[in-house]
Amino acid sequence: MIKGYRYTESGLTNVWLANGYTIRKTKYGEGVSIRDVDSLHRALARALSNKPRLTGTEVRFLRKEMGLSQRGLGELLGVTDQAVSLWERKGQLPKTADRLLRLIYVEHDRGNAPIRTTIQRINDMDAQEREHIIAEEAKGGWKTRLAA
Image (tube, rainbow, N blue to C red; front, side, top):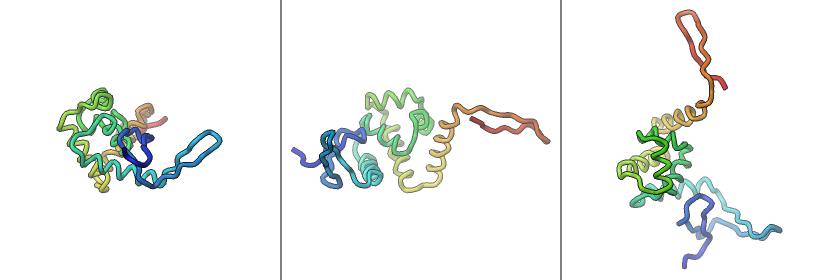
């Protein structure tokens, strides 16, 4: 049996913390405090990027660590958001998508500027999806901007 705290709050079911956490009794029952969750999640994502095959929950974890929606990840991988949703639920993603997702995460983690810029552009597009396009005629042609 593995000793430690089974850390399921991340959405992953196979993570055990050997240390870095404190269990406290509260008036509502036991509570857990985990130190430096952001660093923990980066370490978990790095470990996932080095394992043989990703499960659906691991795909979801990596996607969320990059701050991507299913649509955003689908755009990066050249598939629909429905395909990403299916992978996350069933865990059966094609080998090429599995490898590309790992590569994208590793480059994102390393601070690869073009990858980060692309991911930020996709995140911005997701946020702007519900915004309106305002077109104004100006000298030299029409100009557009996005507005909420």
